[in-house]
Image (cartoon, rainbow, N blue to C red; front, side):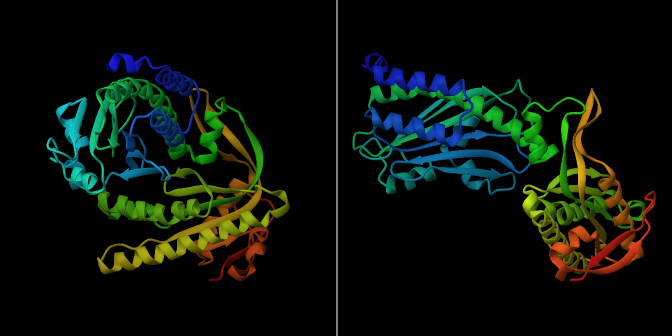
Length: 404
């Protein structure tokens, strides 16, 4: 009987393990792998299992963890614009739409029912039984708020000729709810990390989640500071339809912010149409590493702009131009603002200096300008541009312009 099997001390041990997991902050992939391995170890003929859930992420709509006996566990993320045809034909979509909590399909034998395309694939792979269960949990996802119920779905598949027994199903049902509690904790933590990193950046996000939330919390760090700004933005905003201007602006951000992120920088703020980023000096013995990363980002940003402008010319659309300023120095990296509304950013003379350096790019007809401490790390990419006075800065500054 299912009741006798559910009281099996081995099953109780898994249930207790899940309670322990919910009190910690485990990795979602490792936790699901641990659960599947334990289920198989107590004699349930598990061959494949998949966890699926919605998430709240700027790039992804949902995530899955896929376990196959003997294989490495896979973690997959699905984008908003991904082809939905296969999803809408899946048993999981059917369960969500019809509010079905449990769906079972035999995949072999006289009682086989392969009414979803993916079940044919499972049957051809040697699976004999398929069981999927949904559990409602309150997490923010896909535009939902904290108090809206969403579903996590776990599907279990067997390759035993007889498939799952009634006892197996009873055990999986019991463990599903306990696993959902632990998974909710992990998913909520993951969403919090996703959002703080998306809005603050990876490094500031981690600091905030670690408790740096008061005004003044922060540290002095050395970093290459990047400031870029689109040229003629006021005129463009007046001349172009709003939708066209936003498209142009987002193309620019893809060039500037996208390149900075790809090179390992931290984008801290979008100041109107300006991009403020830093390349922290992680190792004082190799300060040039940050300068090389920033220089790499400059090249990438210029390459991206040339590609985007080429496409824009083909469409007879307005092309974009922007300047980049780079400077290496100490900055205060932390919370600024008022207690009720904070932002995590950098302040200091280096930040003020780099914004003024960027303003000179138009005057000097340079795509990018950098101070000597940055240019010396990649001499082949920069050429001397003379010494120039900066607005609000007492001493003139030696600058190098982009040479590539």
